[in-house]
Amino acid sequence: MIVVTGATGNLGSQIVDRLLDRLPPAAVGVSVRDVDRAANLADRGVRVRAGDFTDPATLKHAFEGADKVLIVSAAIRGPGALVANRAAIAAAHAAGAKRILYTSHQAASRDSLFAAQPTHAATEEHLAGLGVPFTALRNGFYASTLSFSIGTALETGQLVAPADGPVSWTAHADLAEAAAIALTEEGLLDGITPALTAAEALDLEAVAGILTDITGRAVTRVVVGDEDWKATAVAQGMPAAAADFTLGLYRAARRGEFAVTDPTLSTLIGRRPTSARSVLEAIVATR
Image (cartoon, rainbow, N blue to C red):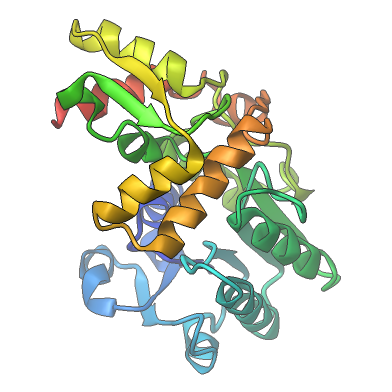
């Protein structure tokens, strides 16, 4: 059996869908914090069990009988994220999983300026040290965050943000397909993968240009200082800690941490990955 954690989230749910294209439902299990939210999966024949990274005792039952476990990284900020990831890895190991997979990030690094990346790097190191087969999926930067990045640009005509740099915006659907392939096809992805990214990296200046082209209305990129941006964000209701976390993203981007592109994702899924333009077109269509 293959067990997927976080199966009611954006990425996890799409991974399960892609697995069900390849496997009978009885071969798939999910570990979720709220089993009621996974009722649709239970109705499809998927094994649904409660599991919470912050309550490791629950994971023993959730991972029981798993041949492979895919751990979707904990959606926690701060040191608790690494603790949670390690608890899930330990539970998968104890359950006898023959391969443990983890959703890491293309910019995983101990010295990254974006706080999530040292957590990914430390989790990769822990996983590699277990001595069991593993796959760390170094996912490209999620393109869905473009919805946040463009803010109110469609209404105001100004894309206001701190200085940034190129980002290889990568669609959840493509990464979910790659994860399903990694879970079901032996020998393709072992250890830490190359960056699983879209084919191009775009900065927010380029994003503003695409928005102008899509909408027919001018969208101008406006660069503001880090502290000015934070003050405005906090005044508009963003917690200061969340603003600092987000500033790390911009600082890492302008250092070039997200500028890497690699053909591995395209090779895996057998087509050109979804473009940032396609993602932006979908965002515009919903507004």
